[in-house]
Length: 287
Ligand code: SF4
Image (cartoon, rainbow, N blue to C red; front, side, top):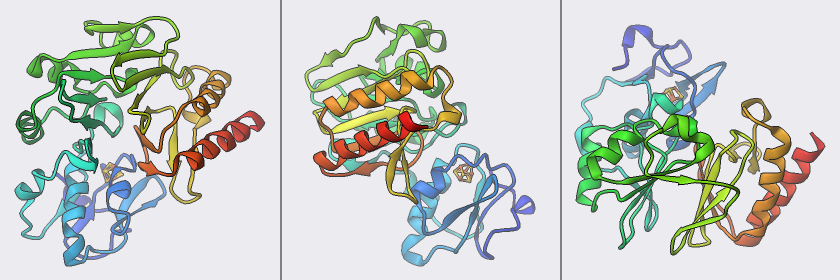
């Protein structure tokens, strides 16, 4: 729980505040950019939420991995817990409850008649688990790479789900039920294609759903200010040249949505998304 005595000085006066335990993961700024802003190495409340914005500010509070956001008002936080998972576009949802184990990484949920999917892992926390039970549970847990597994083992145990991960990431989930070998791609189920994208880590994979949604893990992100797809060399742990080539190969696929592990979800027309991939590849090759 956030401590009002540790409020960072940049906060605008009022009920909502960020305290000094913030790890600057960006989650609150993705969810409620009208309320939260970045200072050097922390988020802060740039403007207290209007009555209409209090609910999104509370969603950010609930999704903060480190409990660094406080609210001194009398808002009904329990009611907002029911918002998660939050629809992106049916049948795809953002889970919320980002985990500190994945440095506040985003995770996603897909409802499917043959069994629901979790992509990377949020916190294993009772209100979310209950909502996922109500939505039919989880049959598959797709893990893009070792950094974002968080509580995947607990979700797999609870829902008797199968975890899917590349062999080169297996040290993070040694008991995973499905292990991907080689270079793929792998059709995991009709409409679900795993694509090998080494670079950020050696066995990193992304998941393409229905040629529309690309669950990108830490392979890609969206630069909110410049409004373009990006990849971060300073967060590339394995091989930048391999990451460049992995990004370039994504131009062979069709998708309109990029749902990253960190940063903003983005939706663009398919042709524009392909242009974004080509422009990013060119920029990465020149770097
Ligand atoms: S979600 Fe929490 S940890 Fe992440 S930037 Fe916001 S206040 Fe900081």
